[in-house]
Amino acid sequence: MSASVLESLRQSVPGLLLKTAPADLEHYGRDWTRRWSPAPLAIALPASVEQVQALVRWANGSGTALVPSGGRTGLSGGAVAANGELVVSLERMNRMLGFDAVDRTLTVEAGAVLQAVQDAARGHGLEYPVDFGSRGSCTIGGNIATNAGGIRVIRHGNTRDWIAGLKLVTGAGELLELGRGLVKDASGYDLRQLAIGSEGTLGIVVEATLRLTGPPPPAQTLLLAVPTFQVLMDVFALFRSRLELQAFEFLTGHGLRHVLAHGVSNPFDQVHPWYVLAEYDAADEAAEAAGLAVFEEAMERGWVLDGVLANSREQAAQLWRLREGITEATARWRPYKNDVSVRVAAMPAFLAEAQQLLGEAYPDFEVVWFGHIGDGNLHINVLQPDGSDDEAFLRQCGHVTELLAGLLRRHGGSISAEHGVGLLKKPYLGSTRSEAEVALMRQIRRAFDPNGIMNPGKIFD
Ligand code: 2HG
Ligand code: ZN
Image (cartoon, rainbow, N blue to C red; front, side):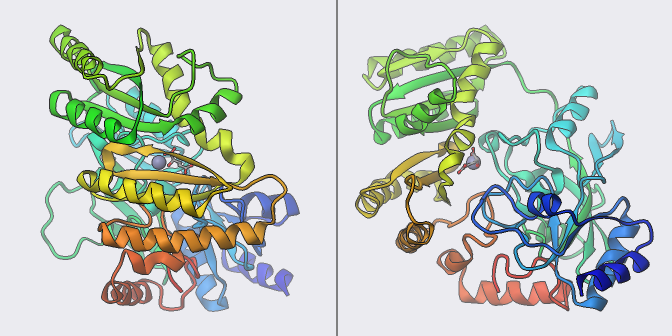
C-alpha cells in the first residue's frame, strides 16, 4: 500500500528526494518531546518551492496528511508524525537568498538554521536578534511556525516582530507572498501574521524575509543568587526601572544542580534557591556605572545572597550556559513541560498560587522552574522519576495541567507562551482561547486547508 502511494508521489513530483529507512523515519518523525512513537509514511525532502507545491497538490489528491518539519527542536509535539503522515523536511531548502542593505532585510529559505541566519546577518554588519538555546539546529521555518520567543524577547519581541514577509504554500497548494517586505501595508487582513504561529496547520512556510537591526551595544552580564521569588521580582522591578535590559532570566537551584552535573562550573561556593541572569546595555562608562549602582543597591537592600558580574565574554558565555543548559541537562528524565505566561505584572500573584498548587500536586516529583521572567514566561519541567510508569506519570501531569490551566484562566494567562500547542497542549487550549475564537480558528484552517491535510491533530482536532 505505502509502496504504491510513494510511487504515485514520485511520479507527481519528479526528482523529489524521499527517505524511508527505519532510522530516518525515527529521526524525522519526532521532536524533542520524546513522548510519541514516530510512525511516518516517509520523509520528503523537497529542494524547491515548485516541488513543495507539487507535493501538496499530490497530498490533496491522495488524501495524505503532511507534517512540515524544521529542526524538530519543538517541545509540544507540533512536528511529531505518529500516524503514517508524510514528513516534509525543509532541510535542503536552507539557502540565504538575498540581503538588502536599504531595507535591512535578509531573505532566506525556510530550512535555514537560525545560527546560520544570525551569522549571515553579522556578515553584513547587522543582527537578527531573535535567539534561543537551540539556535544551532532550529530553523527559521520552525521559528515562524511557533512564533518562537526565546531569551531576548524583553528587548526585541518574538519572531513575529521580525518577519517582513514570507512565502506560504497553502494546504491547497497555492503560493502566497505575504507582507512582501513592506514597512507599511494597510490593504486588508495581514495573512502573514496569521501564518506565523500556525504550527504548520495552514500551509508550509517556504521562504522568509527577515528584518535586521544594528549590532547590539556592548552588554554586561550578571548572575545574582536571591532568597525568594518575591525578591527576584523586586530585583526585576529595580533593574527594569534603571537599566536597558537585554535579557532577564531566572532559574532555581534545582535547575542549576542539573547543569552543574553536566560539567559546567558553579560560580558560587554553594547552590542557592533562586537565580537571576540579567544582561543590560553597558555601552559607555555611564551605563556601566548605572549597572554597578543598581547592583550595589540590591546588595544594600539585602536582596542578594551572592553575585557575579562577568568580566569577559568567556565568563558571560559561561554564565549563560547555566541557564541555557537546563533543557539538555534534564532531558534524560523526559520532563513533562509546561510553558506558561501571564502579564509580567501578574507574575508574583500567579506564581505564589502556582507554587502552592504544584507543591501539593507533585509531592514526589522533582519540578524544575526556569524561564523568561521579564516576559512573564515560566517553564515548569516535571522530571519523570527513574523506573516509574509512563502512563501513570503522564496521567498525573495531565491532571495537574488542568488545574494549572484553571489558574492561568483566573490570572488571564496562556497555556503556551512560546512552545506552541502541538499535541501536548491541545487538551487545554480552551483555558486560553474562547469557544468563539477556536470556532474562528477552525474556519480559517478550513479556508487555507480545505481537505485537512496540513498537520492534522495539532493545535485542535
Ligand atoms: C528555554 O527557554 C526553552 O530554554 C526550553 O524555551 C524550555 O525546556 C524547556 O522547558
Ligand atoms: Zn523558553
